[in-house]
Length: 360
Image 1 (cartoon, helix red, strand yellow):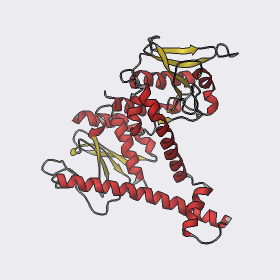
Image 2 (cartoon, rainbow, N blue to C red):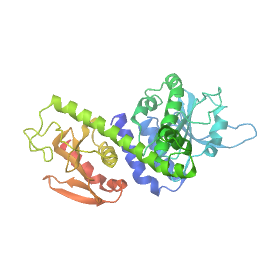
Image 3 (cartoon, rainbow, N blue to C red):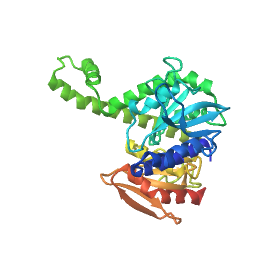
Image 4 (cartoon, rainbow, N blue to C red):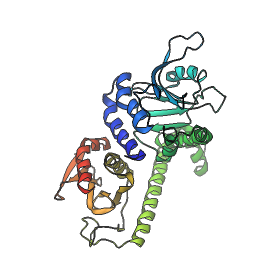
């Protein structure tokens, strides 16, 4: 499998197993060692490449260990400290990394619970690990823009200088993006006051703050949804101009079943897009990510292989209060399964992969 497929497969595993992994050792076995071997490409059973329980006495601290040290070209380049996947990562968890960073040649330190991966270097002071990561990878919601930087840490493409050069921009761009996302989810008083002051001339009293907190949240979410829909419509129109539309976009009964059509009054929701990403992550264990595509229609949101209506992987029926995922058998007979949350899509992972295997 290619890099993107391997990462998508590990993402699926992390999401499905994280809730039942209760110890640090289980986290290492289930998620951390596969990341080191399958994603970064190092042999976890070769001490010339990966040293488990790495010890380097620091001052008065004797016998402390970092979970893994990765060796490249004979030098320790990456230190990894692990915590149980059920726990949240904090700065206190990085204390051993701080100490070890100063007494080894490592320029990269990683703090992880198997699901979230925080990457650190020494941008602020030489040989002193920064207090904030320059890159954060969350296997539950993978940011594809990080793929090139993660690959630079792999055994076959190791390029430390390039990683360090890009680290400062990654650090601040990533931090700003996470802050924006946090404000969209739960706006702070400063964020609410910033927008309120531009549309409301009165005093920013407690009553006004409470009123505009919900209004700002609603407005930002609407803006995000409309922006996503505009991009999807632009992409669909561009695709239609280059292809012949099928006779029936819902059932794929056109001449060849290929080529999207644009239906009026279609609104693609954030839930549909998130559901599509989950189905795609599951399907990517079998095929390359770019082969898994989507089309929205009035009836349902379709996830397809090779952008072909005759190769349906799943259908998302999210237009009513009760959500359903539609799965099709080898005769194209659809069975709808009710779901109460998007996470329940993972319960149908085997059926999704079987659908992909039929066409691939």
